[in-house]
Amino acid sequence: GAVVSQHPSWVICKSGTSVKIECRSLDFQATTMFWYRQFPKQSLMLMATSNEGSKATYEQGVEKDKFLINHASLTLSTLTVTSAHPEDSSFYICSARPTDRGYDIQYFGAGTRLSVL
Amino acid sequence: GESVGLHLPTLSVQEGDNSIINCAYSNSASDYFIWYKQESGKGPQFIIDIRSNMDKRQGQRVTVLLNKTVKHLSLQIAATQPGDSAVYFCAENGGGGNKLTFGTGTQLKVEL
Image (cartoon, rainbow over all chains, first blue to last red; front, side):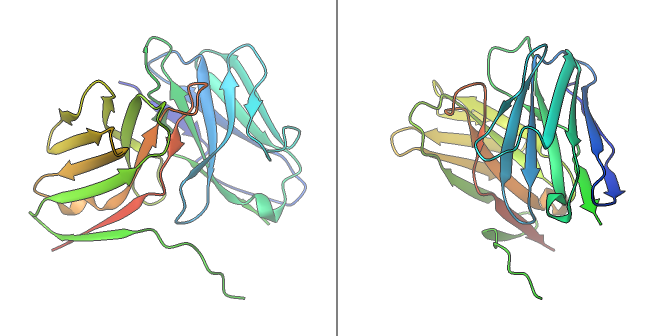
């Protein structure tokens, strides 16, 4: 149980294009999902908290117009990197918090490696 | 040009030995803690968790110890195996908003 699927696992795109990453909780509902960014040999950096049916909450320094988040259902959140540039190349990871748990556990997707040429 | 990156703390152990990975947390308001294992190129995998009303919790081959007095968390892995090689992160929930704050991570290397 508690499986989170993230797609795609790897994407290469040209500078200036947009890329959409999907995060799905397969066997549980998640009112809250999270999007992280991770640089090599570093810890996870929280970008934003995605709440079903409402606007995402972005961490300080994260451009909400560049990283668009949509959480339209209890099992799906999407992150769209708009007008991607080489500096956006990174490993993006989503997580989901089961709605029916009384504590803050998060289950993670496998991550998406984004390379912007 | 050559890039310089951060270096994760590394723990090297012999196969079959016990491993102890430590984590210091900073937020006194944290009441829930998790250990995650992250293999190269993959997302973090849940290992074990503990709430602040406990000081020890055991799983299969793993034990988490919590010392709230000094804000210290440790993960003990018994009979370490090559498959345990990964980066281990501790996480705490003291930031509010259901968020988790992650530690810097420890690279565990298991030598045959």
